[in-house]
Image (cartoon, rainbow, N blue to C red; front, side, top):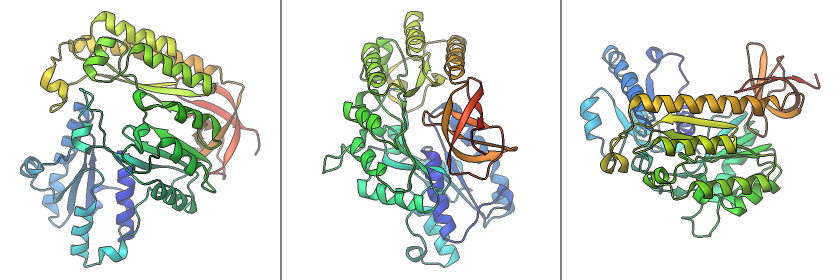
Length: 413
C-alpha cells in the first residue's frame, strides 16, 4: 500500500515538472513515506528522518515531507519533534505537498496535475479500498489509515485502462482488507464484481488482489478466481495464530477450524491455487500449547509463502491498552526460528515439485544479464538469459529451485 501511495505522489510530482533524484543531497524535495506496522519499522523511520536534518540545515529551501502511517490525525507532536520537516501528510493525502510546491513554483495546480496513478511498470498496484474496520488488537493501522472507504468500480476500471495505455500488463488490487471492498458502496457491488469488470479491460494480461481477511473471503470471490482467465490463482490469507485463545485475544473473528475449512474450500474450487499467509508468534499470553497449534496449522496447510514476525507492542493499540506482553523476547525469537525452519522446508518441497514443469512467466525486467518475472501462482522466476521481451508472457521450463525462487530457460528464443 505504501508503495502504491509513493507511486501516486511521484505521478503528481512528475506532472509538475519534477524528476526523481538518485541521492537525497541532490534533491530539492525529499519525501519519506513511513510504515509503522511494527515498532522496528517506526524506529527505522525515525532514524532516516533524523539523518535528513543536516540536509535541511545545508539548504533551507529544500523541502522535506513526511507521509504515511506515522502521520496521524494530530501532527502537533511530530511538528515539535521535527521542526525542520515542512509538510506532514497522512496516507493518501497528497495535497499539502502539492499545494506548497505550487505556491513556490508559481503554477496552477488544477491545470497541471491530472489523475494520479501508479508508476507505469509492467506490473503495478491499484488501491481499491483505503483504511480498515477490523481493529485487530495488535494492529495500529485503523488508527493511522482510518476507516474503510471503497473507490467506485468505474473509477478503478478507468485507472486500469489508463495504466494499460502506458504499458502496464498486470495490476494488483490493493486493500488493507481487500475482500471488504464495496461494503460501503450504495450499489452493493463487491470484490467479485470488481474483478469481473477489471478482467474485461482490453490489453490487461493479469489481475491479482491482496490482502484478504478470512472473515471476508466469500464463496463468490473464490468462484470468480476459479472462473476468470486473467485473475491469478493466488490467495494471500493471513491467519496470524493457530490457537483459538490467541485468535480471540487478537480479535480476529474466526477459529483454527474455520480457517482450515476456508483453505479446503479454496483448494477444492481452485486446485492449482498457491496460498500465502502472515503469522505472528509470541502474542500476549501465547503458551507452548497454543504455539504448537500455529506450527501444526502451518505444517498441515503447507503455504507457498509465509511472512513471519515476532509480536511487539504497538503503542495505541487495543493490546497495548488491555493485554500484557508477557512472552519473553528470547522465547519469541526461538518460536520464530522454529517456524522459519518449517516454512523453508515446505517451500523447498513445493518449489522442487515445479522442476521440469513449464510456467507462464510475465517478464517484468532484467538484472545482471537475467530476465525475471512471476508466474500466475506468484512464483518469482529467473530466466537464464536476457530478453528483449519485457512485458510479454513467455513459456519458461524450470530446471532449478530454491525455497524463494525458481530458475528456468526459455522454450522460445
